[in-house]
Image (cartoon, rainbow, N blue to C red; front, side, top):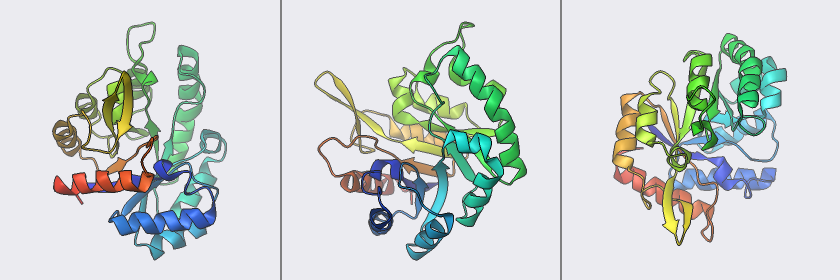
Length: 252
Protein backbone atom coordinates (compact mmCIF):
# COMPACT_ATOMS: atom_id res chain seq x y z
CA UNK A 1 0.00 0.00 0.00
CA UNK A 2 1.28 3.45 -0.96
CA UNK A 3 0.87 6.60 1.15
CA UNK A 4 -0.55 9.53 -0.79
CA UNK A 5 -1.42 13.19 -0.20
CA UNK A 6 -4.95 14.34 -1.04
CA UNK A 7 -4.62 17.82 -2.54
CA UNK A 8 -7.98 18.96 -1.21
CA UNK A 9 -5.98 19.49 2.00
CA UNK A 10 -3.86 22.02 0.06
CA UNK A 11 -6.62 23.61 -2.02
CA UNK A 12 -5.77 27.15 -0.89
CA UNK A 13 -2.08 26.72 -1.67
CA UNK A 14 -2.96 25.19 -5.05
CA UNK A 15 -5.46 27.86 -6.10
CA UNK A 16 -3.08 29.14 -8.83
CA UNK A 17 -0.83 27.22 -11.19
CA UNK A 18 2.23 28.73 -9.54
CA UNK A 19 1.02 27.72 -6.09
CA UNK A 20 -0.06 24.30 -7.36
CA UNK A 21 3.42 23.70 -8.80
CA UNK A 22 5.05 24.74 -5.53
CA UNK A 23 2.68 22.53 -3.51
CA UNK A 24 3.56 19.48 -5.60
CA UNK A 25 7.25 20.13 -4.94
CA UNK A 26 6.68 20.57 -1.19
CA UNK A 27 4.64 17.36 -0.97
CA UNK A 28 7.44 15.49 -2.72
CA UNK A 29 9.94 17.01 -0.31
CA UNK A 30 7.94 15.60 2.62
CA UNK A 31 8.43 12.17 1.08
CA UNK A 32 5.12 11.45 -0.63
CA UNK A 33 5.35 9.75 -4.00
CA UNK A 34 1.60 9.60 -4.66
CA UNK A 35 -1.08 12.28 -4.80
CA UNK A 36 -4.78 12.66 -5.36
CA UNK A 37 -5.71 15.80 -7.32
CA UNK A 38 -8.81 17.51 -5.96
CA UNK A 39 -9.90 21.07 -5.20
CA UNK A 40 -7.08 22.74 -7.11
CA UNK A 41 -7.19 25.46 -9.74
CA UNK A 42 -7.84 24.43 -13.31
CA UNK A 43 -5.00 22.84 -15.25
CA UNK A 44 -4.25 21.27 -18.59
CA UNK A 45 -3.59 17.52 -18.38
CA UNK A 46 -0.24 17.97 -20.12
CA UNK A 47 0.80 20.53 -17.48
CA UNK A 48 -0.07 18.11 -14.69
CA UNK A 49 1.75 15.26 -16.45
CA UNK A 50 4.92 17.33 -16.64
CA UNK A 51 4.69 18.61 -13.05
CA UNK A 52 4.16 15.10 -11.69
CA UNK A 53 7.15 13.80 -13.64
CA UNK A 54 9.33 16.70 -12.51
CA UNK A 55 8.62 15.88 -8.86
CA UNK A 56 8.69 12.09 -9.08
CA UNK A 57 4.98 11.85 -8.25
CA UNK A 58 2.14 9.61 -9.42
CA UNK A 59 -1.51 10.66 -9.45
CA UNK A 60 -3.56 7.75 -8.11
CA UNK A 61 -7.01 9.35 -8.19
CA UNK A 62 -8.83 12.59 -8.90
CA UNK A 63 -12.01 14.24 -7.81
CA UNK A 64 -13.58 15.45 -11.03
CA UNK A 65 -16.74 17.45 -11.68
CA UNK A 66 -19.68 15.01 -11.63
CA UNK A 67 -21.24 16.94 -14.53
CA UNK A 68 -18.12 16.35 -16.65
CA UNK A 69 -17.98 12.67 -15.68
CA UNK A 70 -21.61 12.28 -16.73
CA UNK A 71 -21.60 14.49 -19.86
CA UNK A 72 -18.00 14.29 -21.16
CA UNK A 73 -17.05 10.80 -20.06
CA UNK A 74 -14.73 9.84 -22.91
CA UNK A 75 -12.96 13.22 -22.77
CA UNK A 76 -12.45 12.93 -19.01
CA UNK A 77 -10.96 9.45 -19.46
CA UNK A 78 -8.64 10.67 -22.22
CA UNK A 79 -7.43 13.56 -20.05
CA UNK A 80 -6.71 11.20 -17.16
CA UNK A 81 -4.70 8.95 -19.46
CA UNK A 82 -2.43 11.89 -20.33
CA UNK A 83 -1.24 12.21 -16.73
CA UNK A 84 -1.31 8.49 -16.06
CA UNK A 85 -4.34 8.15 -13.81
CA UNK A 86 -7.03 5.49 -14.28
CA UNK A 87 -9.16 6.30 -11.24
CA UNK A 88 -11.79 9.03 -11.67
CA UNK A 89 -13.46 10.14 -8.45
CA UNK A 90 -16.70 11.81 -7.43
CA UNK A 91 -16.19 13.88 -4.27
CA UNK A 92 -19.82 13.62 -3.19
CA UNK A 93 -23.26 12.93 -4.55
CA UNK A 94 -24.64 15.95 -6.40
CA UNK A 95 -27.29 17.50 -4.15
CA UNK A 96 -28.19 16.63 -0.58
CA UNK A 97 -28.37 12.88 -0.05
CA UNK A 98 -31.97 11.65 -0.11
CA UNK A 99 -33.88 8.77 -1.69
CA UNK A 100 -34.51 10.99 -4.71
CA UNK A 101 -30.90 12.14 -5.22
CA UNK A 102 -29.62 8.61 -4.63
CA UNK A 103 -31.96 7.24 -7.32
CA UNK A 104 -30.95 10.07 -9.66
CA UNK A 105 -27.24 9.42 -9.07
CA UNK A 106 -27.69 5.72 -9.82
CA UNK A 107 -29.68 6.42 -13.00
CA UNK A 108 -27.16 8.95 -14.34
CA UNK A 109 -23.87 7.44 -13.24
CA UNK A 110 -24.27 3.74 -13.98
CA UNK A 111 -23.99 4.60 -17.71
CA UNK A 112 -21.04 6.93 -16.97
CA UNK A 113 -19.31 4.19 -14.97
CA UNK A 114 -19.80 1.77 -17.88
CA UNK A 115 -18.37 4.32 -20.31
CA UNK A 116 -15.36 4.96 -18.07
CA UNK A 117 -14.71 1.22 -17.92
CA UNK A 118 -14.88 1.01 -21.71
CA UNK A 119 -12.26 3.77 -21.84
CA UNK A 120 -9.88 2.04 -19.42
CA UNK A 121 -10.80 3.98 -16.27
CA UNK A 122 -12.85 3.33 -13.14
CA UNK A 123 -15.32 5.47 -11.23
CA UNK A 124 -14.75 6.05 -7.49
CA UNK A 125 -17.28 7.39 -4.98
CA UNK A 126 -16.12 9.29 -1.88
CA UNK A 127 -18.42 9.14 1.14
CA UNK A 128 -19.25 11.65 3.83
CA UNK A 129 -21.47 10.85 6.81
CA UNK A 130 -24.70 11.14 4.80
CA UNK A 131 -24.18 7.78 3.13
CA UNK A 132 -24.69 6.16 6.54
CA UNK A 133 -28.28 7.42 6.76
CA UNK A 134 -31.00 4.85 6.22
CA UNK A 135 -33.45 4.75 3.34
CA UNK A 136 -37.12 3.87 3.70
CA UNK A 137 -36.32 0.16 3.47
CA UNK A 138 -33.96 0.43 6.48
CA UNK A 139 -30.79 -0.03 4.44
CA UNK A 140 -27.98 2.49 4.28
CA UNK A 141 -27.52 4.77 1.28
CA UNK A 142 -24.07 3.18 1.01
CA UNK A 143 -25.66 -0.26 0.71
CA UNK A 144 -27.94 0.95 -2.09
CA UNK A 145 -24.94 2.30 -3.97
CA UNK A 146 -23.00 -0.93 -3.48
CA UNK A 147 -25.94 -2.90 -4.88
CA UNK A 148 -26.52 -0.61 -7.87
CA UNK A 149 -22.85 -0.47 -8.91
CA UNK A 150 -21.04 -3.83 -9.10
CA UNK A 151 -17.36 -3.77 -8.07
CA UNK A 152 -16.12 -3.73 -11.65
CA UNK A 153 -18.02 -0.47 -12.30
CA UNK A 154 -17.49 1.60 -9.16
CA UNK A 155 -15.20 1.56 -6.14
CA UNK A 156 -15.51 3.54 -2.93
CA UNK A 157 -12.92 5.92 -1.53
CA UNK A 158 -13.84 5.14 2.06
CA UNK A 159 -13.17 8.16 4.28
CA UNK A 160 -12.27 7.02 7.79
CA UNK A 161 -13.28 10.25 9.53
CA UNK A 162 -16.66 10.54 7.85
CA UNK A 163 -17.48 6.87 8.42
CA UNK A 164 -16.79 7.34 12.15
CA UNK A 165 -18.76 10.61 12.12
CA UNK A 166 -21.68 8.73 10.57
CA UNK A 167 -21.67 6.20 13.42
CA UNK A 168 -19.97 3.38 11.53
CA UNK A 169 -16.80 1.42 12.29
CA UNK A 170 -14.34 2.49 9.55
CA UNK A 171 -12.43 -0.79 9.59
CA UNK A 172 -15.62 -2.82 9.39
CA UNK A 173 -16.84 -0.79 6.41
CA UNK A 174 -13.49 -1.20 4.65
CA UNK A 175 -13.76 -4.97 5.12
CA UNK A 176 -17.03 -4.87 3.17
CA UNK A 177 -15.29 -3.19 0.23
CA UNK A 178 -13.25 -6.17 -0.98
CA UNK A 179 -12.79 -5.76 -4.72
CA UNK A 180 -13.65 -2.06 -4.59
CA UNK A 181 -11.45 -0.60 -1.85
CA UNK A 182 -8.37 0.33 -3.86
CA UNK A 183 -8.22 3.86 -2.40
CA UNK A 184 -8.85 4.88 1.22
CA UNK A 185 -8.96 8.39 2.68
CA UNK A 186 -7.17 8.59 6.01
CA UNK A 187 -7.96 11.34 8.47
CA UNK A 188 -8.16 11.18 12.25
CA UNK A 189 -10.73 12.53 14.71
CA UNK A 190 -10.12 14.40 17.96
CA UNK A 191 -12.47 16.02 20.45
CA UNK A 192 -11.89 19.68 21.33
CA UNK A 193 -14.37 20.81 23.96
CA UNK A 194 -17.70 19.60 22.60
CA UNK A 195 -16.57 19.53 18.99
CA UNK A 196 -15.36 16.72 16.75
CA UNK A 197 -12.37 17.83 14.71
CA UNK A 198 -10.25 16.43 11.92
CA UNK A 199 -6.64 15.77 12.84
CA UNK A 200 -3.41 14.36 11.41
CA UNK A 201 -3.39 10.58 11.20
CA UNK A 202 -2.23 9.01 14.45
CA UNK A 203 -2.97 12.05 16.63
CA UNK A 204 -6.62 11.33 17.39
CA UNK A 205 -8.96 8.56 18.48
CA UNK A 206 -9.44 6.37 15.41
CA UNK A 207 -8.09 2.84 15.60
CA UNK A 208 -5.55 2.90 12.80
CA UNK A 209 -4.11 -0.51 13.69
CA UNK A 210 -7.49 -1.96 12.74
CA UNK A 211 -8.04 0.40 9.82
CA UNK A 212 -4.69 -0.37 8.20
CA UNK A 213 -5.14 -4.10 8.73
CA UNK A 214 -8.57 -3.92 7.10
CA UNK A 215 -7.18 -1.95 4.16
CA UNK A 216 -4.47 -4.56 3.64
CA UNK A 217 -7.01 -7.38 3.86
CA UNK A 218 -9.10 -5.97 0.98
CA UNK A 219 -6.08 -5.21 -1.20
CA UNK A 220 -6.07 -1.43 -0.92
CA UNK A 221 -3.47 0.18 -3.16
CA UNK A 222 -3.43 3.78 -1.94
CA UNK A 223 -3.87 5.33 1.50
CA UNK A 224 -4.57 8.99 0.77
CA UNK A 225 -4.11 11.44 3.63
CA UNK A 226 -6.77 14.14 3.68
CA UNK A 227 -7.56 16.85 6.21
CA UNK A 228 -10.34 19.14 5.01
CA UNK A 229 -9.79 21.53 7.91
CA UNK A 230 -6.43 22.01 9.60
CA UNK A 231 -7.73 24.73 11.96
CA UNK A 232 -4.76 26.68 13.33
CA UNK A 233 -2.11 24.41 11.80
CA UNK A 234 -0.33 24.69 8.46
CA UNK A 235 -1.75 22.06 6.06
CA UNK A 236 1.76 21.05 4.95
CA UNK A 237 2.71 20.44 8.60
CA UNK A 238 -0.41 18.31 9.03
CA UNK A 239 0.46 16.25 5.96
CA UNK A 240 3.98 15.74 7.31
CA UNK A 241 2.69 14.58 10.71
CA UNK A 242 0.43 12.05 9.00
CA UNK A 243 3.25 10.92 6.72
CA UNK A 244 5.67 10.46 9.62
CA UNK A 245 3.10 8.44 11.57
CA UNK A 246 2.30 6.16 8.62
CA UNK A 247 6.00 5.67 7.91
CA UNK A 248 6.44 4.66 11.56
CA UNK A 249 3.78 2.00 10.90
CA UNK A 250 5.96 0.54 8.14
CA UNK A 251 4.20 2.12 5.16
CA UNK A 252 5.83 3.97 2.27
